[in-house]
Amino acid sequence: MQNNNPLILVVEDDRAIRSLIKNTLEIHSYKSVAAENGQKALLQITSYHPDIVLLDLGLPDMDGIEIIKKVRQWSICPIIVISARTEDNDKISALDAGADDFLTKPFSVEELLARIRSTVRRLQYSETESFSREEIFKNGELVIDYSAATVRLGENQLHLMPIEYNVLCLLARNMGRVLTYSYILDHVWRNSLDGDVSSLRVYMASLRKKIEPGDNRGKYIQTHIGIGYRMLCVE
Image (tube, rainbow, N blue to C red; front, top):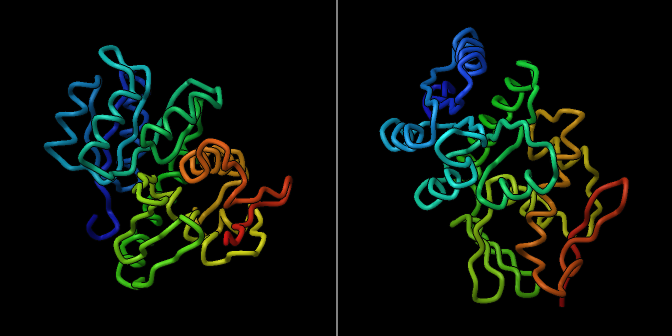
């Protein structure tokens, strides 16, 4: 990403919505390219290497979840899903596949722009943090190598999405302390929206499935209902 002006790929089969998004991006000085189906989207990603992908799940030639899985085989480019699917299971499936954020249709252009600004901030934050962290965090079988931006559970290296990784690092650096929803949103989202608490819960559910598999639920992260989360010290 150069000069804080990311290239954004818009993947949307509905011409009216695609035009709305592209015009909105253009008005706000974002560069963009577009694709109306999955095959073209994959081609555009490999050709243009966009900084952010806005992805509709209901494409005519393939499901958006399949596209996310394919892209995640070789790219960590942030993917913001824009979909009419509203069930938490759909959101979790998209996040598990590798999506970074989920915006439900119908949406306001203000919310879309806020999500994009938030993603840009996360990209900038990750770039800065990658130069400033060198230590390794250990808690039980959980190991975070900050310099390599990797997470292991025992002998297994985990694949975490950028938001999952940043939330985990925030909890680790504040182990034993209850972090409120607003604190996490302010430090990870950088420009949180009131409605992002529900999104945070979805990301936390996805993260916990990865670091607390099987019967280990609650081993590392404790939920304080209505307040926030805390990382527990594991002997």
